Image (cartoon, rainbow, N blue to C red; front, side):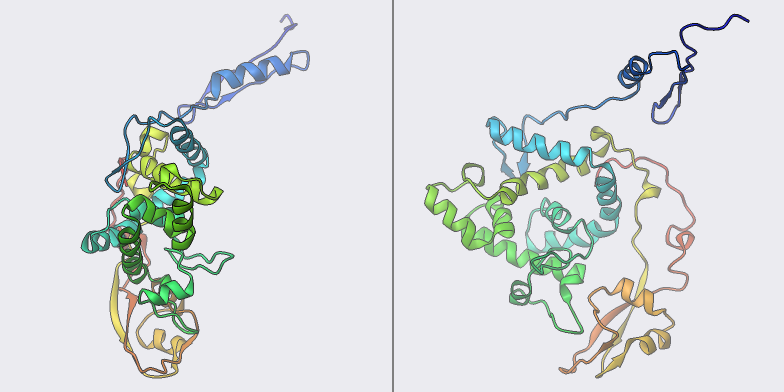
Length: 324
């Protein structure tokens, strides 16, 4: 059999992912083949920007060049940080059904659920500035809006309680600044910081004021999350419903008394300590001193509540997610 003098190439395009494999002899110009394979098998697309867009019912001035470019940046950052966006989409299935009815009850636009996404990624985290929880409250602000925060309990880590506090805070910001967009910006940079900039520059719109780098990106990050999570397939994210993180079924019991040993409390209530802490992230210690003698409502797993078959009723929905 005559030897090949140039190349031996095998192209195999997989049905999933469009990956192309190339095998070549040493005599082959591997750089040229690599360039060709890259052109055939790898595509990076710039996002299509919407002509019209709103945040919390307020028009985004999409005909302003720097507004379009700011949104373009955040869309690209979040489109191509795929692992992070996938986690947001998966977690939203668990968190949004808790957040959405509270926003509705409090008269806060649903777009603010994406502010929670941007603040924490829908997990309990603590920032270098000691802001904590899903909505990233600092201690003084959290307490101002009704959250209990001490050595044993931190309600910033409770999704329901912190969402209610965030609603109260956002409504106060809306009353002060006159728009939900400015309320979102002030949530990030503080009331005084935004007020000073608006006053100094003689403007009233978030889109017209020059702010610090973080806050100047902040609303656009929320908008990018909204666009992608509202229509994930349009931005290249194909997630099956069975891939989403499910809501965990739970039962409630009351916790009262002083110096409560939580290991014993969990065991006495047919639960593991781990699941007690999983379902009640507002508990921050191994005991609750409860000096004020309060009664707390505690979530505990139902029987078999950690089993995926139990949680999903044995069903596997492989339909693609259309919106979050």
